[in-house]
Image (cartoon, rainbow, N blue to C red; front, top):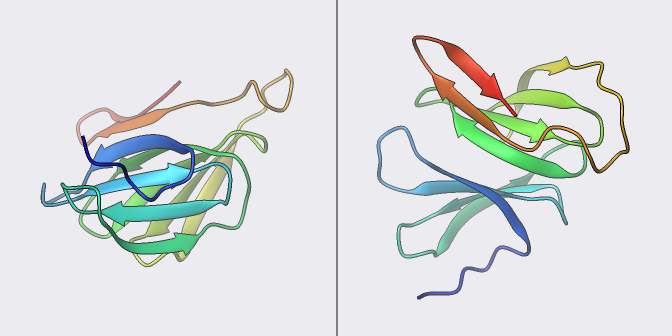
Length: 111
């Protein structure tokens, strides 16, 4: 097993081309791109806190869950925000959205 240099990773998804992984860290609000061996090749900060889930939409876009603000943020693979959608959910700040997946036929599944 190879340790990865992502503090407190909260999610992992395979890239659109299947060559690397994307992960998020809720500790530092960063998105990380990792090789299949776990080496960080890129990272960027998302404007928000408590990142919990990440999924790939297409070759250029990702969707990230912000648990505390109950939002899904669509970003490009350079970290630029494309759009976001908030959800009116009740509960404690740390009991919001936890995960997300994307299927081009059914679109998003949010947990």
